[in-house]
Amino acid sequence: FRAALLWFDPHVPGPSVRYEPDGLLVTGPGDGPDAPRRVVDVGPWATLAPRYAAVPLTHWPQRLIAPGFVDMHIHYPQTDVIGSPADGLLPWLERYTFPHEARFHEPAYAASVAEVFLDELLRHGVTTALTFATSHPASVDALMTAASQRGLKLIAGKVLQDRHSPDGVRDETQRSLLDTEALIQRWHGRGRLGYAITPRFAPSCSDAQMRGAAELAARYPDVWIQSHVAENVDEVRWAAQLYPGARSYLAVYGDFGLLRERAVYAHCIHIDDADRALMRETGAAAAVSPTSNLFLGSGFFDYASAERIGFRYGLASDVGGGTSFCPFHTMLAAYCVGRAGVTGGGLPKQGVSLPPSHLWWQHTAGAAEAMGLAGVVGNLAPGCEADFVVLNPQAKPLLARKWAQADSLEEALFALIVLGDDRVVERVCLAAEAQPRL
Ligand code: GUN
Ligand code: FE
Image: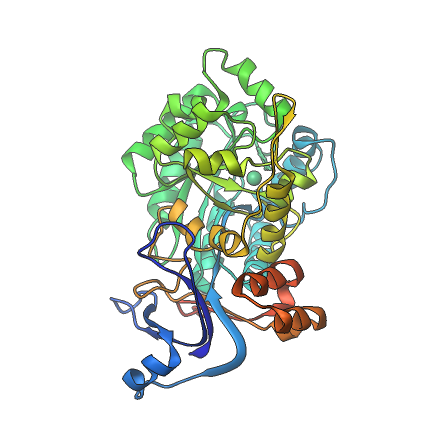
């Protein structure tokens, strides 16, 4: 494929962006018959073209090829909860989210929403996602079935919530753990699918359920863990009441054995440096969800402290607390959150100006690395699974102008982040073929 190319240097840790205004991306078959296609080579057209003269060529002039986006935290059953206003997280869960998720006990309903959800991800160029289902095991089956037909990389799990949850979504401790193990065996590693053990958050899971989740996480080390932590001050206060002996809310998960690599914790807003060090030491990652945090008024992720301590994080939409599936909107909100800075101990801290290439990295290669998928997805370095988007900056008049006026790569990426939306995502190419619907 010949076009402008954006990717990240796989040999340099962090967001070392690479750009080729006239590039060549060469893809080839994966290792096995059903293995995802892989990137074979990437670089300047002029140097690579002679080497691949025999390979069929597609030329997309004035287009930018970039890695498919990675959404580290989203809720597929909240596709229709987007834009439900409430006075913060806990009222929002009670008023909209739990009643809506209760509908997913109905497999046909779950299947219909799964289709809309996957269509939205792909339309926006998201080719890898880590998503919550609901507490109903059938909600996982519906989503995984639909995802395997589409060919994107999807990791999902049945929500665990056996307390402080209303009828219709509350599950039963022993049954929930048996269901989780059965779902791991049914779906984890099948095609591009993965499973995530999914305790909703500590306040909604009994000690027995948390212990059971941790026990499964230890027995299945390549299965993911996903949960929420320190999103909202009322939630943090509640967690402290429920676990008076824990050093912090995050430490509750650590004490149960739920912090490890491939463990993704959404939000991580109201945490301290000891928590950040715990994230770094355990290899757990934060899913930063700025549109959700702004919409629900949860607070601001502290980028400066995250960088200072050095733990893994990446971007996420958190739909339906989040307001958009669009990676451009999420990156812009992350930039605004960085600028806003945070207030610690009543003293405003200086904001940070995250460069556009850093924001882009957080939503592609950085997110993949945080999830334990470095070199697998989120990048177009040789060996990566060949998921990519073809972006057309001409798709919006104002963006076309800003794109043409840009004097540097960072300015051009800023134009896309600030002015881009789904109209700009002209094409989405997946490493796996879509399977015919059964
Ligand atoms: N904490 C527990 N459940 C949820 C949820 O569904 N969304 C968000 N944003 N936070 C949560
Ligand atoms: Fe969430």
